[in-house]
Picture 1 (cartoon, helix red, strand yellow):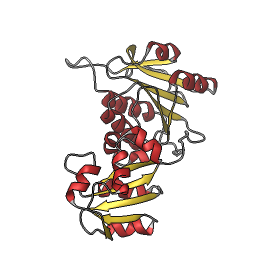
Picture 2: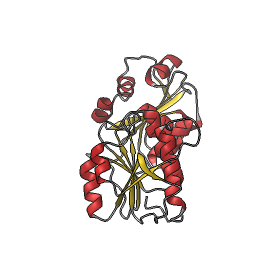
Picture 3: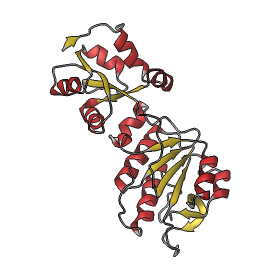
Picture 4: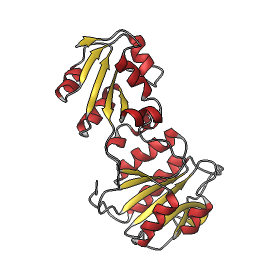
Length: 261
């Protein structure tokens, strides 16, 4: 491997720019930090551009085999490029996948209505992946899936979960015309355990923002409203926790159908 020592190196400047949404759009790339994330990106078939390493690593050879450049750099360069406070000593730049679309035949979707916290969005993506749902809609105000904080929370699931950014009310209206049921989490909804109706074969589960919940416009479009009963003293749940409970509850009675991803 060659060595880069300067923070002013053109490649290092490009990698630094990936910390912002604008930089990712301009470069058409994102940053994967740490061995786990880099390997997940490679295994998902994404195209690496370059990798930097604090020390010699077998992972550098894997990146080079995939067509990327690999360089050793001092710790200060790693720290300047990575978003984490204590980076692991390796990072790689990958090309963004083409504009995402939901998979053909998707039946069980999650939509985020203004969920703003990157950690919540990343955790929801990871849970969606684990629960075997088919895709994600990100409405206005949601963070970029390939931002560093979201990426860390997904633990690689961002590379597997198909997603779309959209004007949520317009996208939901189109899905309703196609026969999807819109299911919203709502404080005035039915107790999810007491509800006796069957789970629709095709649905979109909408999770609202941390502060306001599901917007009135989306609630008005909902076919089903569900609430998670608070059996203790807490008045509400974290958005990601609520999303996970509802995802597993809704899929529990529909069976483990083959993923459309």
